[in-house]
Image (cartoon, rainbow, N blue to C red):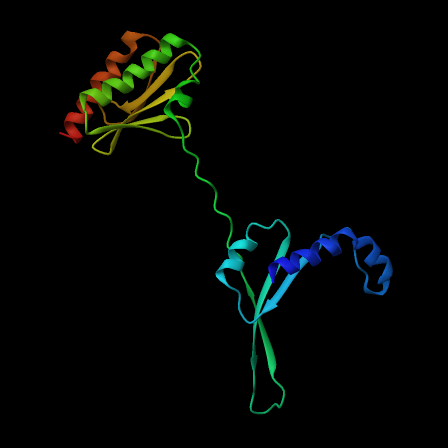
Length: 192
């Protein structure tokens, strides 16, 4: 059914201006895109799944006929069938791609060493999960810090002494001393 309909769609679409001239009394607007209209008692799931991939405008209507006691003829009832939408393909973020945003190779190595420090010190309990723009550092599935790359440095977000989420820019080795201590204290408090 769908294949035959697409053949008709192609045939009509390629000559819509001719049909508009030939049937001028129907006021066909050749500037409007041609639409596919299918009417059936039901549609298979296979047809619905195929329709979602077709770029043409498709309308599907299911129908049933009702017979009322007061009327001799049957009355058709139409209900539009929705076509499932195409799901977006999930984007998988890579740690190396996020870290490559840092242009200074020394700072990039320093950022990798922070990730290694978390993964080594809490081995088996920790993870470094890339997000859209950052790397989420977790211990026991609890976020303990975010590593956020910048062009010439990176920023560690973690909980400060007052348990508030705070940024700590890392430009050199010593800049990591404070967030390192805060991360260790937070892990002791929350993760044991």
